[in-house]
Length: 494
Image (tube, rainbow, N blue to C red; front, side):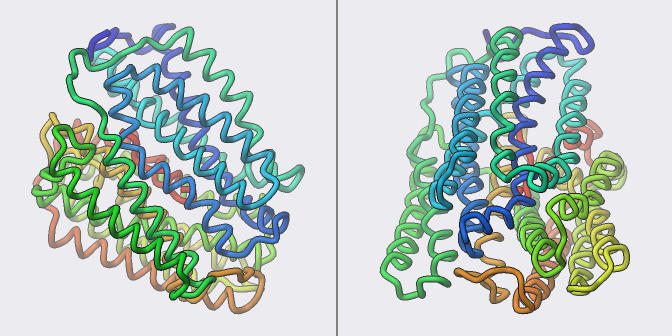
């Protein structure tokens, strides 16, 4: 089957089955990402793990996902999107079972890394299947349905995860994936058409993906373990050195291979580069803040898992309600103002989290901060993504949105590693005392500053040019990934 695919029509039985399969599979990954955050304190209690162990529980997933995401998309283009999508679903299911059965935090971290590989294969394929299967006239409507339904999984994730942790065990968070994976495999095998780029002569850039993952792994290991082991520890130094070497090798490889995973030439476009810099700092602030907020709520604040999950629900609701409107606004006035105002409002909301401390009321401290924060993110997400898509030509649209997706995930990865360190939290320390609250307040101010910087970057680097309505509307499908990209962290999937 060629690139054009079988042109399904929206509203038909065949079309509904394809949407159901892609929503179900990608929804598993999105749901798992959001529920893990509220399960972290329970994992820490079971394994007597410190902050470093929890950082790795999140970052192992984000590391492999961010490192192999672009490769996963290109493998689908070459060898069949349904085939790679199916492999990703099955891989994710096996890794989920390994997470549920993990006897130690080290084995859980390993299994989470394998989960990330599975997600890197299935997440890009979910949207690619819709894009290539539906008739052009129905494609936007199909993407919108995919976005809305997948957004529901993001919205219920924290509540559902908190309930499972409180009434049963954190292991159920991973075990619940197994029947969903089996259903997704059955539906995909029976109802999803195959598609690929016919006659493609290039090979996947596996070497580039290995160097990218190696660079992230080495640098993140040094950042997380340096606090616990000491910055002069031989393993920390070796990891840091290997990370830098892999980063250099990645750049050299991408310049020399015929079909690079990441064409460096696209960064010559000022707007594309600026939008991705904004993504890096804003999504970094988002990921780091929500990681530490979950620990602050369930540690010093004494919330249960389900209460912590419900506490952050205002962010998701605001994103689902207003991101599409922000995209429409960007199509009328251009992305510069929304991408400047949005991060700055979000930064104000994060700064308000310094009032969150033991004894403080949710309604007068946590809730107002998250409403301001969520409002700022709702203004930011769709215009940011639309600006990325509008900045590059159609030939690089898939790569461009994939790069933005990967940048958002890497931002969360680095934030979880760096932010606790910068705030004086890390190593084998727990998260139940006043020292953690002090560190949380410092981290909130750092994240707030990152958001303000993101707004300034947009003001000086983003064009005032109005966006085509198709670009702004297409970006709506990325709305749910803002929350899902938190350590939750997943984000824009193209």
